Every structure is written in structure tokens, then in C-alpha cells.
Image (cartoon, rainbow, N blue to C red; front, top):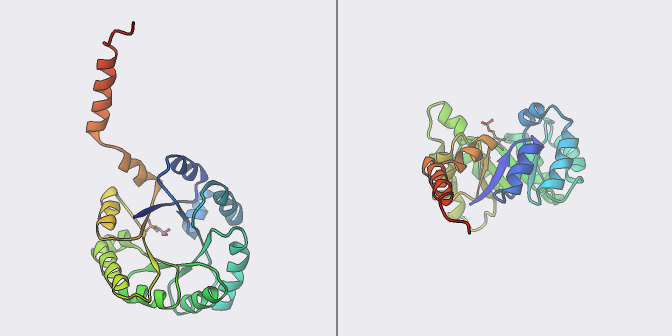
Length: 216
Ligand code: E4P
């Protein structure tokens, strides 16, 4: 399973990219707002950091307007993926963008039926939001599993699944176990994935013992 980072903070992207663990980035309007910077500026800068898919979301409501909003974003760099919120208009926009050779990530997926429709409309990626389902007492991972099964059973589907709305390291590990293609992970969760108390105490013990080794 590939790992993307889910943020629009370029310092976080740079740090995690330098660790060699991510190969893509997802943003959304809320994450861009949190960065406090202009949308296009952030997206352009991300393309100079990560050599992989970078999702930038359109906010127009009409399919043709979504396409018009997508064109200058897609022109920034070949790695730009246009993120489209799931609904009827979004599917129409997805079909149009696919015909124009623009790659898409259909987002805000909360059911297998939605994921199947997005795949049929030509989505390059679908983003089921597992954390937000867990938040309302549903089993988000069950949805990921269902979509993996459906896409695996249909040879005409090439759409990749991005496990999104990740809240903790267990979400990442479970997504990998059920065969999800990608997990897009917030910076905080990537930092949590680094930690194990036995690693910390193990390093401390090695340092302590090393200090007692005669050096000459
Ligand atoms: C996915 O691409 C979204 O940006 C993101 O995962 C949403 O997560 P949230 O539920 O933490 O806002």
C-alpha cells in the first residue's frame, strides 16, 4: 500500500517526503484554509517537493464550471489530480475530465455504491472517508474492504482506492491489511507511526552501553 500525506502545510510535506515514506499528497479546501496561503501558491510549491500525485479540489457546483476550474490547476504540473466532491454533477465533471485526459480523485465517498459509480465515471482515484464514518458510529474499515472486493472482482475497473479521513495508525495498518491501494495520512498520524516505547528505551540502552566501550 502506498502512503500519501493529507495536508497543505508545506513544511510537513517536506519533512515527511525527506523521510522517504510518502509518494503523494492530498489537500482539500479545509486544509488549504488552514495553511493560510493562496490555493495556487500552495499547490505549485507542493509540486516542487513531491514527485507524485497531488490532489487539488475544485469547488464549483456545475460540471462545466468544475472543468473550467480544473484546467488551470491541471496545467500547473502533470502530477496534479483534480479532486471532485461526489454527487451527480461531480460524476458528470469526472466523465468530462477523463475525456480531456485530466486525472481525478472523487472524494467524500461514504458508500460502496458511490465508489462504484465514481469508478464507472472514470475516476482515477476514489477517496472513502473512514474516520468520518467511525465518528458517526459506523465501521469505516468495512467500507474500505467492500470497495476493495468490488474493484478486485471487476477487471474493467482500474480506479485506485485512497483510504481517507485517517485518524490513527490502526486505520493505516488495517487499510493495508485489507488490500487498499493507498492511505492518505495526516502528519500527526505519521509521527505517531514512528513511535514505540521499546524503540525509545532500546536506543537509550544502546547509547548507555556504547558510552562504556573503550574508545582507544
Ligand atoms: C481526503 O483526501 C481528505 O482530505 C481527508 O482525508 C479528510 O479527512 P478529515 O475527515 O480528517 O477531514
